[in-house]
Length: 416
Image (cartoon, rainbow, N blue to C red):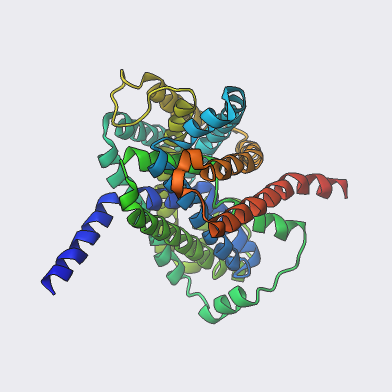
């Protein structure tokens, strides 16, 4: 009996020691752009698009498991593997596109910081520079262990959306009915929204960060089952947060016919409907999510660009040991924050073009992943099993179709 207890505690201890990459990567999904997508979808369609979180969850688990397995088996980042197998020229064009997209994504995160703090009466000219400096200081002067603990705290903080949703007094019977039998008119707007919800779950940069964080943590194949638990827990937490964001906005904004354009609007609109506290909780959740993603996103970008071109990378390294890594990270942060401080900056256009670039590059990245994870010379006996390939290629096919529809839908809409 005591041996079994000791074994159980030992396993829990191992899990807590490796906890991080899956939960952090999954939680970053709920960034400023993701919160905006969920909020707008729920405000327009009520509970009727909550079902989309189910396929999103499946795709997220499948892709992140492959990332973790590749990182553990090879000890190399995804960027490194793509360069070795696709060549320098193809790698260069892929990563130039990813770099441009990620600068746009980082700008969107700082827009979330600015918008959330404006709900509390703080000017963006104060909030953005202070947050930008604190993020830079934590990464450049800290260590991976310290940063990871802060990131995990941020992940837990996102659960405050549960509070905001419950204060909206949702109709659980209607929610269950909407998941099982959603009532939705199929048109260009609803299809675009479905694509947006599923598409916001996976971004190209996430695949690189997941694999790099597994390597940074030094995980081995004997710890794989604990890593898989970490991934599943992270994906569940991601979908739970997304679910309650949609519930909060559907039960208040949709029922009162209030339309919004961004997450900040949702926080402000909740005040007269669910109370000032619900509004503040929603805004603070947006603030935490924006800081979280504004830290992780440029960090992931610096990781995979340096990996792709053979430079040293890692926040446990000193500035002189990984100069290119820190210069790139700092530059992305400065550009992202500076754009927000420009009066009348075209944030909607930046967000749109960022989404277009992501849409074009995501299938390329995922196809590269599938080819690598099925290469026995690279993965040995840990190549995908048949069921992994069915799910993996199925996920790639769905994402390719969604990306193409996302790109082509506006063209056909304008033509008509």
